[in-house]
Amino acid sequence: MEVGAFYLPSVGNLQEIAQGMAGKRTDLYQRMLRDLSEQMALMDANGYYGAGFTEHHFHIEGEEVSTNPVILDLYFGMQTKHMKFGQLGNVLPSQNPINLAENIAMISQMLQGRVFAGFARGYQPRWVNILGQQVGLADPGEGEDYEELKRSLFEEHFEIIQKAWKNDTFSFQGKHWQIPHKPIKWLAHEVARKYGQGLNDDNEIVEIGIAPPTFNKTIPEMFMPFATSERSIAWGMSRGIVPVTIMTHMDVVKQHFIAGQEAAAKAGFNLKFGQGMAMSREIIVADTDAEAEAIAREAGSFIWNNFFVPFGFNAAIARPGEGPFDPPATFEALSERGMVIYGSPDTVNRKLEKLLKELPVDYFWMFIYNHMPQKACMRSLELLTTKIWPNLDTKIGQARRPTPLAAQA
Image 1 (tube, helix red, strand yellow):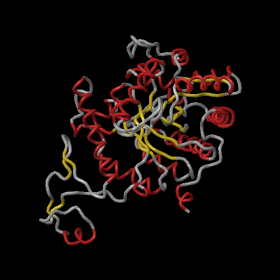
Image 2 (image 1 turned 180 degrees about the horizontal axis):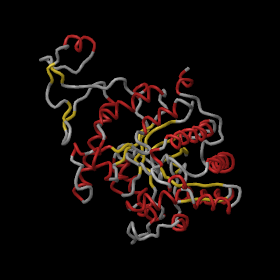
Image 3 (image 1 turned 90 degrees about the vertical axis):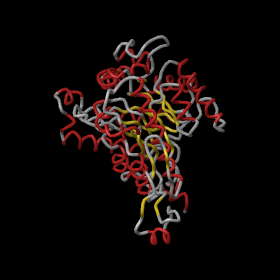
């Protein structure tokens, strides 16, 4: 099992966010970059798979200042040697898919293959409606038709990205995109024909290709956060995408795993139960259970209950028969229902062993809410790295795997 860190890069601690407009403060943003750099250095030296960042815009409150995860990938990737970096995820409906395919290909080259890609549908109308207005997402921001439009854009944009990565040149005719819209008269046809491709017999452009390609033309590992329905999980696993679940009720998650396994089988992938799946939880470790609880109470639950619950995210901890707004928005609910795992090393070892025995996965993404004190966060990572992950089926604590270039030498 690979272990990585999933960041919603917060700007400011609880008190600073409470003062208002933390997302507009340069001093707090610079501190976030320094703190995450220190965390990345620890993980990079100890066998962690990678780190991923969400995409959100206009978060002047400071809770998720991650406007462009691709730029964050490059920033931290240039400071490290082994980890992979990616998006968890880019919101496809409001993105230009060709630009995104190009951007990820560029960092794939710059980091020599140390990248992965993540794709999401988006749920925040404050920015999805604004940035997606040119593709019909400006209004109303809710309802069945709106969700189906987002799903249609998501699936078409994903297909375009795959074509861009897998082919030297390509064309595409879909509901939302025509690439090219019609053959393009190309004045430099002699050069294009001599040194490139994509022309028809009338010297018109009928196919385009991105340059550079991904590193060695390899397709990055792909993730889909957060997969909360059988339909989404089945769609992803049938296409080689790793769904990331945050659902906590054991019966619900097991049924999701089975649905994904069956969809993968129909697509020709013979997977075991849990193979091709990922899970995300917040984990807080300290020297004692009491210390870990005190830290955890002011860590992820602050962001979750204040900024996620209004959008229905408590569906992740809902029991069968409950709606997304039925579970209480409390730390106790998140803890009792398994979204937050905290305690001493012995306590967390027991909890993770039980969880992963029931729900084996290929990837485990640790939610890291970096508004918590840096000292506590670093201690938690140190204890996870030395006293917990090496006891489980992970690569943490093993000899560092070689970089892609070293592997080829």
